[in-house]
Length: 490
Image (cartoon, rainbow, N blue to C red; front, side, top):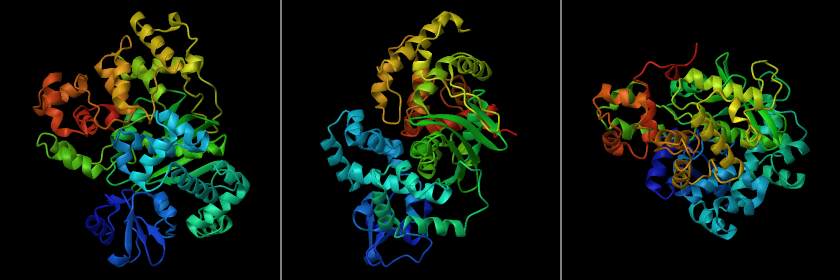
């Protein structure tokens, strides 16, 4: 979008927050870059130039605006919805892969050479993987500086910087303030101190956001010991590269309040990325709803509760295991089966609030389980153990960087994996916005109620007009049934 100058100018002059994250406005006279909704008086048109990423702005010598804080704007929905190598690279960089594994590690995950990845990112984003990762580190550093009392040396290494000098230079260049000055500014407007060791932050999103199906689904399917709904917040444990964490996510009118407790602050970048992915916060609800509303049979559902997101997962392997446990059983039964696995094979954790007890078991932890101990039909046991074996051996990868169509082809070859299981994993674990569940019982009942075709083949043909947002259409169709997944818990 940043190449459409006229459209960008209109967005900036109207301070349209819907375009935050789609592009960034750099002001040639002040050398500052902003998000489109920046509250200051818009600059003259001739002084504006536009970039596709904060990293490109920084690489061109612009520093972040202190008013609108463009480094904290919602992520680009383009990388959320696309499946090509550039989009997958952006999702991996957001997860902190470059900091942990370097550019060669990023390239290896994508199946390209480091040179190819560099060339593709430069062509589309005006910045290479190192510059994009540097922008990510700067944002993480700012969060740690402003929301914790960690010494600056600890902040530097937790944010992924290789030296304190690089950390200081980057913060000064990006924010035009020294790290200590950032902390002083934050302290002047800070609220009373939070719980020691807990990082509190706001996760921005594009309005509208309807929390009912999002948090209702997560709460209704919560695995005891791993997830819970408490005091208006969804809480769960997180398995992270350097340790583990506990997160509490609370819906607010203009953001999601996030409280993170981490055993190692180096996991902050990935924890934030996983939470945003879980809640689908980088979606563009206006674009989605406008297309679905064009169908006269879907329009009433969209108008009744616009802004529905697709509830996802913090771990693709975890969700795949849970999808198998949930085959052809009720939501309550699926929770019971998952809770038994957690108690037997999950790693215990200490939760100061007392409700969470375990991390969900990894595929490696489940590799040694005895199928005879599972209270499942024999065919389901075979499905589960085959899935766990494929995940443990690395034959199957389920993550934000996964190629959607290739993974579908791999999943369908596993015993016990039919279209419903494959598509629900594509929708919630892989993040494909066009995943569709025509064989789902709730979808078929909704189709019949609305006058849509109710057979899978006919409904799939009818749903072609909803592409590439059929996963969002599923969320609206599910609202026809009065099911707990559609309501915020009391």
